[in-house]
Image (cartoon, rainbow, N blue to C red; front, side, top):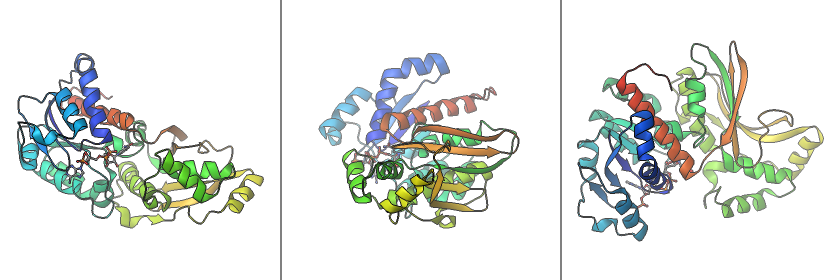
Length: 336
Ligand SMILES: NC(=O)c1ccc[n+]([C@@H]2O[C@H](COP(=O)([O-])OP(=O)(O)OC[C@H]3O[C@@H](n4cnc5c(N)ncnc54)[C@H](OP(=O)(O)O)[C@@H]3O)[C@@H](O)[C@H]2O)c1
């Protein structure tokens, strides 16, 4: 399978390293014979239909000299050339989803399968992009867009096949969970935020996390998968954690409860809001962990807990999608 990767940041480079190190295993175990024919960052695109030398690309990217590669190409050549799948890993933009929306649209329209870990284009245009993929008879997969390596999307879409999901509820932003956990331990919001930034959990501009928009974007994706609700970010009622003070946190603890930024959807209401939950709830996970509870009609409530981010973890989710794509294309009916 020929792949191009747009975005060579933390996840893109981790993906290249995994392909380099585990290529043989992916081939022998899953029959996935992956050839990376193109890569691009914000300035340079490189394409070779025979396959790129991954070690050389990683080295050149590390040294900041990708520009010197002999096989420079245009992004259009990458997207519309001989590739089977576009792996899209550019930064998240929750305003208009660009540039990812443009790359994904171009690839789907050109009959290429697309895999992304970027929640931006999905938050803004998920129903339209799904429709475009279907119209062009190609697959559009995005396992890494929610929960990093933790398979929350598959949990909702696959594990409960044949059952009706009634509601989903969870903590799908590690930064706010870290801040609230540290506030439980007595730190002010400001100090906990600074600590989260120092540890690399929070961005220099933390507003997407603390104001609830990152959770809302992920909720859009989960809700569309669980309920085919056809929603975008505009349909979510969002409230962040800035107004929670230490006195609120202490009061909750005295009553056997704790504050969490909860994302909720039942297919009709879509909310992100700080809520008090019991200390005994399975959703009471600590630090930067994420937890998603799915309530199904027959099997009831089930909770999946895991790390919500990480370059290597998210690269693992992209590989999961590549294997899934291989299985779907082989049409051998195996359900992974
Ligand atoms: N990191 C995680 O833990 C994680 C977890 C889940 C999902 N994700 C999602 O995965 C995606 C990638 O994350 P990341 O952490 O790898 O991001 P990142 O480190 O910021 O890397 C982004 C990459 O995209 C490139 N880029 C920027 N603008 C571009 C443009 N207009 N055209 C082509 N390439 C462009 C950048 O180029 P330069 O190298 O030239 O700057 C860089 O290589 C994001 O959407 C993120 O939300 C990340």
